[in-house]
Length: 199
Image (cartoon, rainbow, N blue to C red; front, side, top):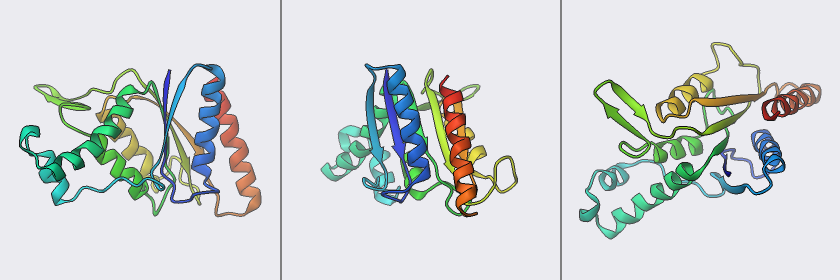
């Protein structure tokens, strides 16, 4: 089994989404001792966002790219290779201003490539990243689950599904801005939900 862990919190320590990611990965490794783990911290190793130069590189045929363009595309290629190789993907998605982090958005932009991770057909788009399990950990300062203010889950469900990633389990830890008791309760519930998801 190949496990890919994606941490997207801006925090180098004390991140709840990273804590949950680590707990899920620890459980997977305990259940599958021979599993191989690849971990990517998008704050420590930020991926460049899409700009005009990146678009120019991506839309230039490979045999016509400059050295700079080839190097830029290679950055995305490395992320795509990790996703393709993974059997299980664990994504930390803390809520920043009602959305995902800019670091995670850049990673998403890098791995979405027509003809590689999805394709367009006569009957519509088809995701090519199939038969993979995905866990997404959601940490929030307030309470948004199943509410109008939760723009994350619909976006994540749509995007992941577009790539063929439809076996997705969301784990929530909410209320981290509501005081120590709320934090303790949220973490205990998240831990229980993780154990249930891994059972």
